[in-house]
Structures are given as C-alpha cells and as structure tokens.
Length: 298
Image (cartoon, rainbow, N blue to C red; front, side, top):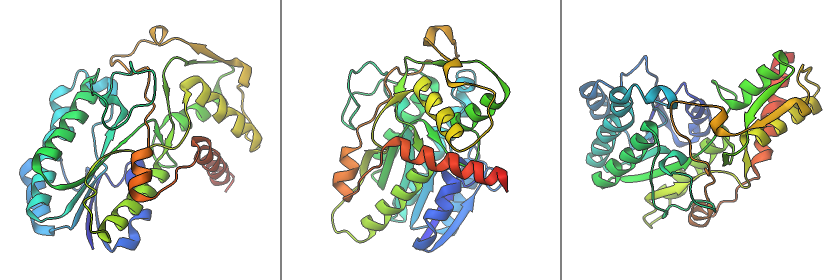
C-alpha cells in the first residue's frame, strides 16, 4: 500500500511514521518538502505519487495566532484539505484527516457525539469544521478523526510545558473550568493504523467522522496536577509542589481565541465500528512521563 503522510514532523505525524510502517510504502512530507499554501504543487505531488491513502496530520494549530492570521489558517486548514480530498477521490483512495474538539462551542453538559450540532468559537475551530465539510462534499472515502488535548514525546505540548515550568517555578496557575480528555499522539497513531487496516479488509463502508479520545475526563488544572504527581513518582526533581498549582478561571487567563468549556468527546462510535477499546486517559500520560524521564537520564 502506498501512503502519503503530511505533517510528518508534528506530534501525531512523528508517531504515525512508526504505526503505519506495516502498511507498506510511506512517503513522508514536512513543511520543508511541500508548502500547503502552494495548491498547484500539492496537487502535482499527489498526482505524481498516486497514493492509495493520504494521511493529513498537517495543520495550522496556533489557535491564538490564527485569530490574526485568518487567511493563512484557512489556506492550510481548508484549501489544502480540499485539494487532498478531490485528488484522492480521483484515485479512489482513502483520506485520513484529523479534526478537533474546537468545532464545538462547549455549552453541552455531557460528552459530544459525532451527531451533535457544531458551533466553533474561534478561527481555528471554524477552519477545522470547514475542512470536514470539504471532505464530505468531495465524496471521497474518508476518516475524519476529531480529537482533543493532544500531547506526545515529540514537539511542544501542555504536558512537556508543565514539566518544564515545574522545574523552574515554585508556583503555577492553571485554568480549572475547561474540561476535556488528554489524548496521546501515540494513541491517535495506533488507532489510525487499526482503522486503516480494518477498512482495507472490510466490505462495508466505514467512511465518516469519528471521535478519537481515550476514556475519562479532567480539566487543565487536574491534568497539570496529575503530570506533576507522576513526575514526582518517577523521581523527577521539581521545584514546584502540587499544592502550589493554583486553579484559576478562564476569564483570569485571557487569550485571543475563545476555548470551549466542554471539550469532552464520546468515542463509542469508533469503538463499536472497529471493535476497539480505549484506555483511560491517565494510562498514556504515565507511560510518557516515564519515557521522558528515561530519555533525560540517558
């Protein structure tokens, strides 16, 4: 199988290079290899390579910066995806695309399902929703995976930021009124492989939108607390003590882009469709903190 992977040097792309290896030939593309704002070059790349699967792990993800960079965000998050979906349709292939909890406004009192009404609050969220619509309009075979609060070994993320700050500061304030489910890039990559593999061997059409997060929920303050607790359990020397991680409200931590207060996604559909089971969110956090500590020691 020929796979074309965009965003290969990002958090999820890094893990996908590992997880997708058993599928066959993988052509990896970073922003140095292809400019997603250059639509003609993107189109020619796909036409020349003729992939059976396109995996799009590339996006403009600077949520706050997107508010003042709407044209660039739209170009990368929507126009490039439009080209990918149309070209893979011509090849009768599969497009795997990663979307976001930010397509919702966060006003629901329970976890969001794939059928719930979307209402993005930010430029980033609006472009992620528009990309979903472009994919569906193209009528290509597709997996749209909505995920949230992504972290991983590679790249910058909340988990690594908290570990860094905990080694530098003796007090930290963290938002406590935004709820979601931390999702590891490794889990996203492993589930992606499982879904592609099962789809290739299935006669039924499994195209669609799927929530992809582990089980459970927390808020950013709770997530930070858990990170610091596990770091201490693994023997990391931190300046910050858990009791000095102070909760604050969103309004006391102003940001350019509005965030949904409820980012919790219900992953029942993907589990039933592909006969999968999800771990609790804490499982991969523990594994990654241990991995990061071992990496630092070596």
